[in-house]
Amino acid sequence: MGGEQPELLDLFCCAGGAGEGYRRAGFRVTGVDIVDRPRYPGRFVQADALEYLAALITSGEVRRFAMIHNSPPCQAGCALTVGTNASRGWGREHVQLIPALRDLLDASGVPYVIEQPDGKAPVRKDLRLCGEMFGLGVLRHRNFEISGWKFLQPPHLPHRGRVRGWRHGTYHDGPYVAAYGKGGGKATVPEMQEAMGIHWTDVREELTEAIPPAYAEWIGATFLATSRLPA
Image 1: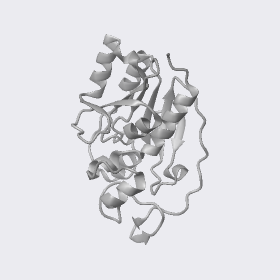
Image 2: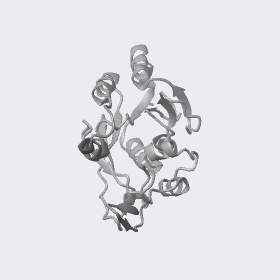
Image 3: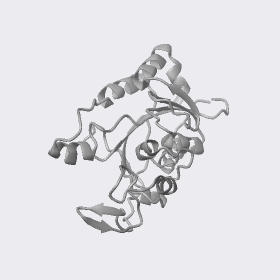
């Protein structure tokens, strides 16, 4: 790569919680999302992520990327969908994109990461990160399937208390905010911004779907420190 910044493809990028972390780690980032994301902190392409990746593979352009990060929609396998919502007959059917995505990623030959929340999504839990590992004001546990490189799992530190909010009619205080949904003591937009270290967007939907940049910064720095990239 001749001293240039390595490139990273950020699929299903939303507002760029992951993208900003990889940028801080030293990558030049391209984000892809089917919805326009004008606040994305890098080059942005509005497109269907699977179709865009397939076209890159067909053209051979995918090989210019050192790594591909993927945060496909999680509703089909997240804990809320398969737990509370399913038990009460709420919600709707959600398409599970991960198997088709993984097939394309394997065909690309590029190292990759697939990120998902806790739940029953069909991903390996090769890596698990938590906000407490980075001194954040959210717990936001996330699982990562890793392919094409090796890493060390950092220790999962004990939580300092509860997530603040109402649970079954009782209010609990705590050092972490609930950065999802509305009502029940959920975090305000400014609280979510501060807790996750995301200040370039004030759109609630984008904040509730984002991972803290600290997660991707750690993953990206680890990848760059342990991988032998082309010269």
